Image (cartoon, rainbow over all chains, first blue to last red; front, top):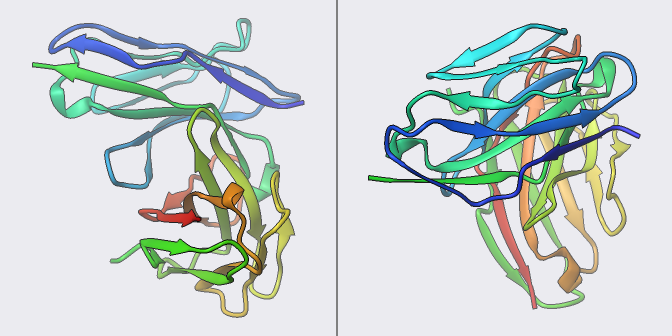
Length: 113
Length: 114
């Protein structure tokens, strides 16, 4: 079946460090892929997305490339800030027109000054 | 623009009690969803709706009922709450369309069942 696997956290980094959060997926067909972010006490919000192979999604300095050959969508940022501390969820859209998402378990990122 | 609003934000119930969570969106979205978030399990889809008057089961529907009498509202009901339903519940909505469309989430409702 369809599933998303992302690296377990927490991930603790110092400010200005390089960030990678791994995400791999299993799906039939060609799903769209997403990264959502959840700041403390808030709901999830879309960070970036990619709809087809080799697409690169980017936003707020974060990037992720849809790699069909490795079924991956790893999240990267060159220099993290304290304000990036949050839980990051990788997700895929498997429901076609109904927009149903399957989420990974989430990765907590803590950035220390 | 309020987006997606959930009420209440917090609630404590005793086992066997009933309650309803209300989700309201002002974006004229066709689709609405209820998810639950549990530690180590990410978000799991409970029920969803593709339009006014329609509902469908998601991944974990047991113990919950939903209604979509108005396009802007999606209600999640617990008829007889159980401790296993202690969780944070998120409502989301989206436009109808292709798989590239994205969900807008509410801020969540934290439910504790004693």
